[in-house]
Image (cartoon, rainbow over all chains, first blue to last red; front, side, top):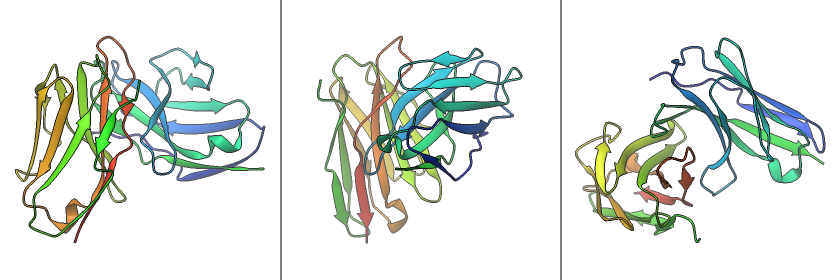
Amino acid sequence: DAKTTQPNSMESNEEEPVHLPCNHSTISGTDYIHWYRQLPSQGPEYVIHGLTSNVNNRMASLAIAEDRKSSTLILHRATLRDAAVYYCIRVTYNFNKFYFGSGTKLNVKP
Amino acid sequence: DAGVIQSPRHEVTEMGQEVTLRCKPISGHDYLFWYRQTMMRGLELLIYFNNNVPIDDSGMPEDRFSAKMPNASFSTLKIQPSEPRDSAVYFCASRPFGKETQYFGPGTRLLVL
């Protein structure tokens, strides 16, 4: 099953925007893109998800390419508490099967 | 709500022993998922249940692994016999019907010596 591709790590300064990219070139037309993050010694937690259109919530924004082969998670103002591993996940139409990528470890510098 | 509860949080056992991991999903959630996380393979779905019935167990690695959900508030993942390569963090997650989000527990860190 095709997984997503993400950079291993990224670094950001506190209170600056962060753009986390993800490639999912083999995504099917009915698959959703979800983003979760995982803090050390914790389970993943939901960030945002989308299908075709860009999405915004209180945590982040999700920009999905028109051809749906890539997407970008945008944290508008990174804080130290945002330091985590961010997973871009291909999710089947019924939201039951999650195909995790390897994740991007985000380091936020004060 | 207390969230998804998993026990034990840490387990150390010897090769060949039986290991049982436990999960209590969030009350009212219809779906329950078991995942395994390793450095080599990342996060992988093992099995999921809908209304206590196993729906897809294609991710279960071997017959040594089995999962049950005797009621809506309890599930177990059993490994018998355990092997060192089973060492991983095992997560349980649950999801309510009609919602997109899975809620993960804190995980059980298993070490098989």
